[in-house]
Length: 505
Image (cartoon, rainbow, N blue to C red; front, side, top):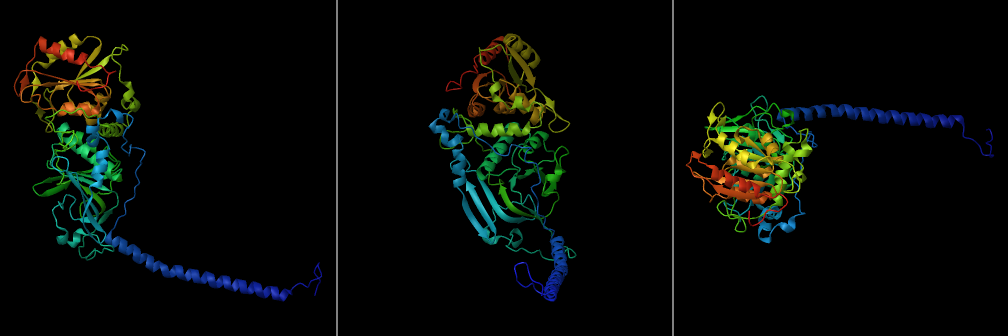
């Protein structure tokens, strides 16, 4: 033995080698065990993959760019003190809380649930349904009236669902959609910007109630030709390509995906059964003719025939969200989205932009066919020359045929204007995108008298000034003279942008 530096004996070399041998042997045993387990797991992995391929359950990923859209609808509460107490319950986010709290569980089965959200205080009791873990054989399938006890097992998604049959025996394969789906029924007029605005408001409110961003929209139509303007608006609601279904004579056709939208983002790219993690259904229990615009609430809102003066941060928040999403790709986006650019009457020499909403014939509705609206102005060119001359250099008058404009261009035009003037009709709906404290001058006549006050009420919701007058005429055209032109000029000049709209509007 050799002495250690501190007088202790060192272990023999032979004992040291034995420990190393045992360590090496233990390492070999562990390594072999791991390799055996890996080899054993390979068939299991192949079985799992085979099952997944057989059932074709597709887990969709949220791989879209969320920076493209303004995902959250925000409501400005700084002017909340300007909203009367009688209006606050109906036109502020308080109505969203009321609607959310109205939730009723209808039934449940395994992981499947069905819930109803009725707003009974509103006319027609608008109700949307929420389904969790449901399988549809057809994306347009009406399931609202089915009794829970009569549900077919195909419509259910059990906790550990299986598919009958296999790929060789013609089994029905499923695509599983995890992104929230909002489905809208066909009973509306997508060619009319006013009528379709009900649907936009309702879907936006449902998204806010349920805190949904970037939903997969399923829009169902009952006509072969889908208006591009309607599609433009829906495609601003989400980064996912909407699904457009045409249901006619019992046949459902899925339209080919839009060329200007990234179709790879859509989780539904084929027909067939779909397993949906969550679907919000607005068909057919939700009336397409009801929205914040015209409803009777039993409170401040009394329908299209009665005026109200309710300024709505809810309505303004939704239209601002729409505008931001629609115009997000514009080079001058900041200009269109900045409401502080409204000019103060009498404080500067800036030219006031006045838009005349024309009801002259335009192309095309349906495609390839000229459309002639009712209540057009007789000799419109001469009328506009007279109006422009009497307004003078302080105002810049522009004629716009909103029926032939895209949705994006219509919103751009409204966002950079200060006053809308026009005969009662759907083109005035775009005044909702005017800056706050701007103005709308509505002309009645023919088959639309001044008892139709829904554009007045839209102006109130948007917090813009409102004026009106009537012209003589019939359902097809309205007559004018120099006196009526002078009346319109006075209405326009009476709008002061540095004053808040009030009871006089």
